[in-house]
Amino acid sequence: MSASHRSFSRGWALASCVPALLFLGLVACGSSDPEPAGRPGTHHGAMAATPGTAASTVPGMRGMQGIQGMPGIPDVPATARGLAAERDGYRLDPEAADLPAGRAVGYPFTVTGPDGGPVTDFAEHQTKKLHFYAIRSDLTGFRHLHPAMAADGTWTADLAALTPGTWRLYTSFVPDAGPRKGSELVLSRTVTVPGAAAALPLPAPAGSTTVDGYTVTLRSEPMAGVHRLTVTVSKDGRPVTDLQPYLDSFVHLTAFHEGDQALAHLHPTDRVAGDHGGPTVTFQALLGEPGNWRLFLQFQTAGQLHTAELTLNVT
Ligand SMILES: [Cu+2]
Figure 1 (spheres, rainbow, N blue to C red):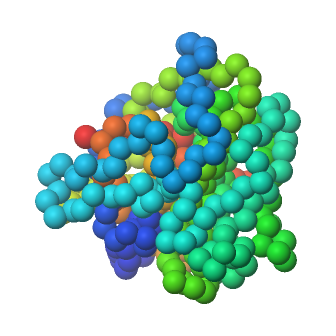
Figure 2 (cartoon, rainbow, N blue to C red):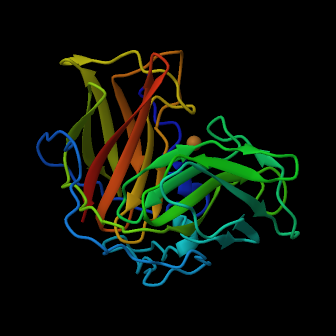
């Protein structure tokens, strides 16, 4: 891959909504520590039973109270972090506020546009017209789907069985018409899955993890106001160079902030060139909120998608 950093702004998808607002200080991780085989539940009934309606405000959500040490950076409204259901006249309209537990289910929704009707005109970004993410409030159960849209603008995300608890469901899309034509929007709502919910503790920050026999290592270096995040994939001690393009990238990185589930969606600094890549992919990380972020790193080899998870602490 080329070493050029041709698109700083691509480094942060949300930056396309609100440029240069989210500054993730990606703090160096601790020692190598493979992902625990399981996340034991330590207590029960602790999941917030947030009502499923999740309008454009989220109880307890804090705006970014400025960014410490980042003079001149305006507060980031919830809408810029994917936590609002409505923005600039675009609204995420699901058919249901609750989903059943224990079985696969379709989640139909539309995106209502400023004219009051369902949006059907979407531009492709990262090879898809709409990206759909789901995460439980304890940052477990990550889903990344690409639903299909019916002619009337109804999308249906096919969700494998969800565990009980409060989930936040996100859509990321680029309108191909209207006032936000060409710019990415992230809208989300919560849904409640009934049942006894056990909140799992977030794994400790770590510098590497393993998935499907691959070791994924994360390194960060502070640069002027941002951090360069370097992801390296190896297997059996050897660098992996047969990463396949996946959504215009060799590694797709999605991150969620502990506590408020703010979404961060990073793009590599380098475009995919050719049909294979690796072992290293770099990101310009513009993230702001201190605290823990759960990172989901997706990459594909031999037609199989792998998802590695790591916690990063941001100070
Ligand atoms: Cu996607």
